[in-house]
Length: 266
Image 1 (tube, rainbow, N blue to C red):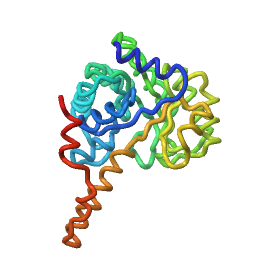
Image 2 (image 1 turned 90 degrees about the horizontal axis):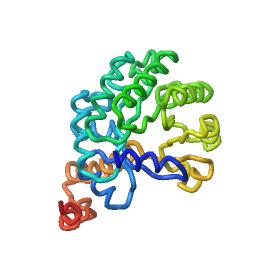
Image 3 (image 1 turned 45 degrees about the horizontal axis):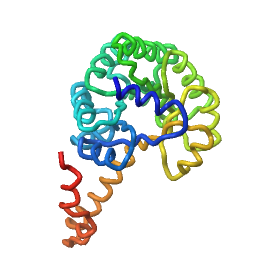
Image 4 (image 1 turned 90 degrees about the vertical axis):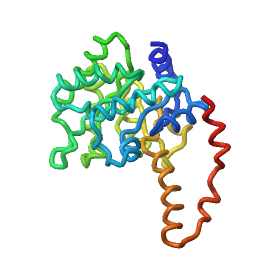
């Protein structure tokens, strides 16, 4: 409960970064670097166990949440994808299970993972958010619920529809709103203004600085799979050099084992 309260407090004013570890080790290091809260990444986790994003099981995800939440003392918000269910009752049941893992918050998205119909129909999407809210209220945890509209990364980049959905999710009980894939600062500001006073999360990237996002009212900045992809970039570059050239210079740029060991003293 203390972690939940701390996560709520972070959303009350200002702007904060909530980076995304993909395992317990990366979570510990991010906590050491001073971040006040963390969020899981579904894709980063999936790649770490040799699967594609959105191809892990509910049981896999729940075990992952437990591992991350128990590894750190800061609040953890879980990327719960689409709740691992289509119908509202299924979403509610699965949210209840997720809340038992020690997380302080979770997100529910409106993506179906169906290329032909990538978003849940509007009314169903809203009922799914209501169901997640009811499950949180019934649990007594007050976990932070983030409502995600996925149009901009699911092939439906319609700003007006995205705003309509986010406003409906706010009315359905979402504490924070998130539309990944929007990178135009004017569009982000429109989203912020449309759902105010509810806080908005965006994915940080090279399109804007922390100060620029804070200036337009963004309250929370995550990085999605960015850190995981950065780690994989270094790994692949070094491994490909060995495989293709028979040289090992990439390994010389790595930090030492001693330095890593010093980060894991407990």
